Every structure is written in C-alpha cells, then in structure tokens.
Length: 439
Image: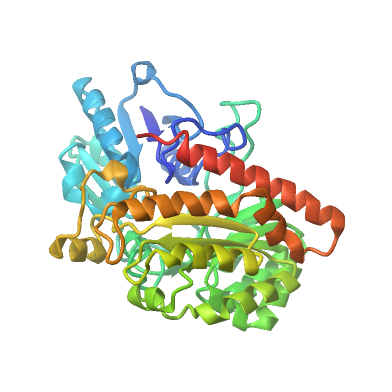
C-alpha cells in the first residue's frame, strides 16, 4: 500500500514565496508525526511526504492508494480542490488538521473521511477500515487516548528534499490549554489539556541531534510543577530551548532561574494587548498590562529573550492603540514582535458570537489568516485595522527602533549582532507579509 501525505500550504501569513531564510524550515511536526504513526502500525506501507511549506508540488506526479491532506483554515479551500482532483482519480482522500477538527461537517463534503483531533489512534483505524472496505466518514480522538509512550515523529523525512534541510528539532510536551481566551482555538483542538510524562519527553529530546530544541506547546508553563521537573531533567542535556508560555511564569523567580540553567534562551508570550480592557474582553484578564515591562526586564535578567505577540482590533481598541503598542514595544525592549489581526475562527464560540451579532464581513476562509480584518471592529474601520497592522510591523523593525529595543544588551558585540539579526528578521517578514502575500 502506498500513502501520500500532503501539507497544504498553510503558513499563517499565506506567503506566496517563502524567503530563503525559511524556505527549508517546515511549519510544524505534523508530517513527521503522521509519517511515524503509519510506519509504526504498518511498517510495510510506502509513505511519501509532500509539504508545500518547503516545496512546490505537482499533483499529477502524485500517485497513491490513499491521500492524506492537512490544512489550517486559510488553506482549506486549496485542500478541497486537491481532494476533488484525487477523488476524480478514484483515490480515497482524508483531511485532518485544525479546520477539520473544528468544522468536520463542512470538510466531510469534500473528503471521504475526516480526522478530528490528534491522529495517534484514529489514523491507524482509518487505514485498517480502508483495507477492510468499511471506511467511515469521521474518525475522532477518543477520550481514553493515552499520552504515554506516544509515537515519536520521523525527524529526517525532509532531508532528501534539499541539501539545506535538517532534522525536525521541534517537540510537543503538552497539548491543548485549559484557558479560555476568546479568540484562541487551543481549547477546542484536542479535547482539553494533556501532558506527556516528563521522562518520555526527555528521552525524545535525547534523540535530537540539534543542540537547539523548539517546544511547540500552546503553553509550556501551564503547570509550573511539570515545567520545573522538565527543567531539572533538561539541565544535563545542555541544550538551548524555546517555548511559548504565559506571562504568569514571571512571578516565579525560582522557576525562572531553573529555566535559565536548563538552557531556556527565549520564550514566546502572548501579551495580546497593552489595553487592560481589551485583555478583559477576551477573557485574558490574568494578563496585567501594568506588569508587562517589569516582567520583560526580569526575563532579560535571567538571560531569556522575549518574543511578544499582539492581537490588533479587539473591541476596546481605538486608533491610539497602534501608537501605544509601538511605544510599549520600544520602551520595554522586547526582542522580537509579532502582530496579528483579531480573527474569529469557524467552529469556535467566538465565531458564533460574531455571526449572531452580524459582525462577520466575510466567510471566505482564505482570508482567515490573522492578516486580514474579517469582522466589523467596534471602534474602527476594517481599513484602520489593516493599515495599523502594516504600520506596526514596519515601524517596529525600522533600524532606529531595532537599535532602541536592543539597548538593554550590555555587551557591545552581542548588542550589534542582535541588532543586525533583528533588523534582517524584520525585513524578511515585512516582505513576506506585505509583498509576497497571496491575495
């Protein structure tokens, strides 16, 4: 049996062409995990990987007994067109991913089967049913799914695609989130919050050749006791690591010290807004905007860089929000910054709320990439939001503002290295977002 797995081009920014800096870097572990699940359960199966985030594919060159498509919301229409093509060739197609999990009935109109949630158990069940001639329409992650001894991703599947490609160095220790931030899909995607045993995670990391590890968890600091144990066991491995966390981690100096000692060099924090009313509106009131600067300063004191993300166009935001955000970013010396536009994802309560209030501008999922304003803002126009979004990206990464943000670094050589690195990063992302973006 031959199975072809396709990651439909789905970078959140929907870039037409990826920069040379990111061209050979997959966006996720998805293909590695799916490949490994199949090979573990069906070792004799031929599995081919096609990932549009790192390569251009030709559908006519793909021939298999089963096609698997993975797509996020802004890429799902493209996935539907692929499914139609392969079904015209009488090849069965399944679709999985976040959009499939949130909108299974819609996806089922285009695919023979839909995988909802994590595929650890459901994908093998789907393949067995296909072989037995009893393929079902839906395959769901079960409530009893174990997070112990999970299948480890195939880490070298990209290396034959380019001489520049390297092993996948991403790891997922925890899944989902128990917070209920209004705009976020994480509470919906994998039936709650789950932890892998720390020892399982450590054993996986030991197998990674790279000395830098990227955790792709939604929030690695959700359970601080879990994170503390993880850090203790990471220390002997002497690897640097990055992870998304909430700002609440800054309240625990003992944990910050341990994180630094274990190799944590950078964390991603969803600040979302410098307007406390906006934070309350989206049920993220546990973020206290008045504490942000002190928290960033504390993280820097432990040698931990900060990537901050901000959501623009929340209901309490007005035209002053853009300047206030830029002033904060510069004054607080955030190392890297990402901006997105408030987007209600289909299948969430927030989407239903916007729909019921007649605030949806469009239901063209290709525009649901967090770079387009798809709802009627409360205090601005959609054009205001999109122009402010572009203005913030460009102003944040202007050379003079990069220099200001890096002023906290005492070492002259390290400071200028970070200035150049940051400036190049900004140039690359600004070009991809605003010049190479799929229209």
